[in-house]
Image (cartoon, rainbow, N blue to C red; front, side):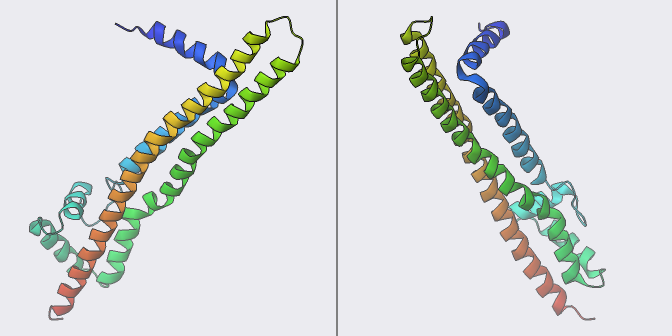
Length: 198
């Protein structure tokens, strides 16, 4: 069984070899995780109006499979003075947070491989510096230290960037589908409300 002490020792060994860029990548990984959790939460509609967040989620996932929720929403809108404006405001409340957060999340995710690449360059500088300098350490030790720094930061940047990009792209696709369903529901509701006698 792997103990926490063993994991921390291994992480410290990798961190000391990877230099400050490795720790910057670890901090970036936590920031990306926080951003993705925020996006996941935002797609559960915590600021929903007219319906509960759970009802909005059900309605937007299955627009045609929830007639009782659709009827309730239609009744709520029939009491509004301007249903079109009310629906527009509801859409803003539902989707404005994720719309603002997705670009920032993608920028942070894109930064991970670039920081890894910066670590590669830094490691190569260490390697070439070790080859050129007359130091007390054996040249092979300095060279291997530089190569280790280059490889560990590159790998860490890719390990952070690739999976989180996939998760963020999946969340974005889900968000886009929900927005599309919202616009379809909006059209249906406004058409239905337009046919009702004044």
